Figure 1 (cartoon, rainbow, N blue to C red):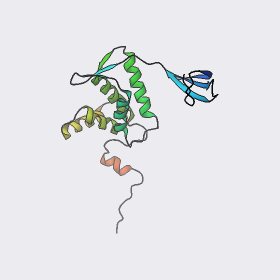
Figure 2 (cartoon, rainbow, N blue to C red):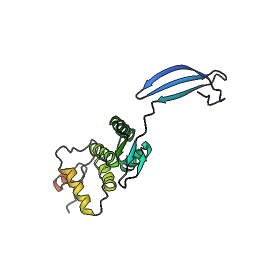
Figure 3 (cartoon, rainbow, N blue to C red):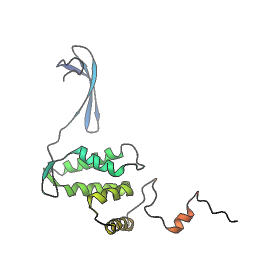
Figure 4 (tube, rainbow, N blue to C red):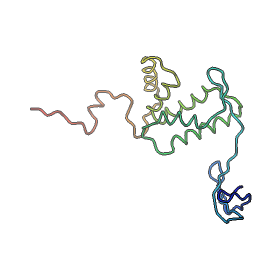
Length: 179
């Protein structure tokens, strides 16, 4: 391990700690005595994604994270939620043991997790992934989301559509003054 300060080729490990799927090592350079931290993780074998047009592309974690982040942009989600979703999907992909997977497998995994996480992010992602061509397709996706029995509103979010009676019950609504 090269020292980041003097580029000497040897260092000693002072401390090691396991973190989820990585190992954190505190090191000390044997030449300049500077201390630095390294993170080690197992590099999984390559996984290729078969796109809709039959091209093969190496799996890119960053690309998956960008797509999910874009769908979750400006949503009231806790910090680290997107990273957790990406970690879960990536782990599940590698657990399949396959060298190649269709892009639709990843898209379906993202849709499944976003449906439980945030309805607006789900619809945003679905509008790109399902390539809605008209408002009817979008309405159908919303109706499917609202109609599924297991659909629950994630904590801290408003429902996608509010009925008139629910609107009237909402706190903080002022009544018009009668003169």
